[in-house]
Length: 161
Image 1 (tube, rainbow, N blue to C red):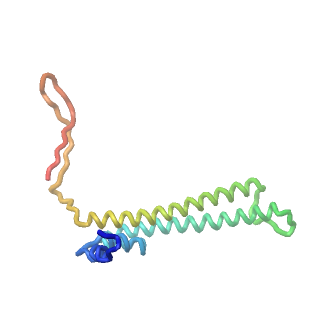
Image 2: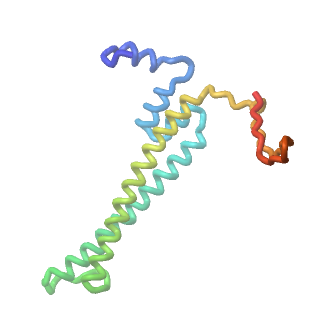
Image 3: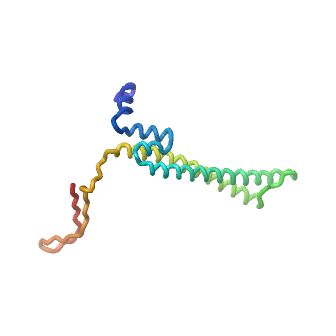
């Protein structure tokens, strides 16, 4: 496909009846939409639960970080009119604000990770949309014995189509 050729993109976009490109773009634009397009709506619930959990932790860590930071600043600014809202010495407040800042950074990275996994899942599931997983395909692993000059033991692997 020529990257400067818009017909190549248009052909992939209009791939009938199911397009992995559409699933990827839908999931990129609206998280969970690619999973719905692929017919796996239950996965969109997992995506929204993951994103919601990340947003909750971002909100909670931001609130705690700001509270500890303002208390630390009020304690060390040498102004008698500012009173810290949280108890503790300057070392404790400084360590607490640093900890919440690290947790806030991790929460943002987790949000990005859930978003990226959402897009990757929609793409892979779009490519595997027509993959046949029928009950006719079987894999059997069982112990076995071979008799030659001496008895050998092992495992046999049988794949039936």
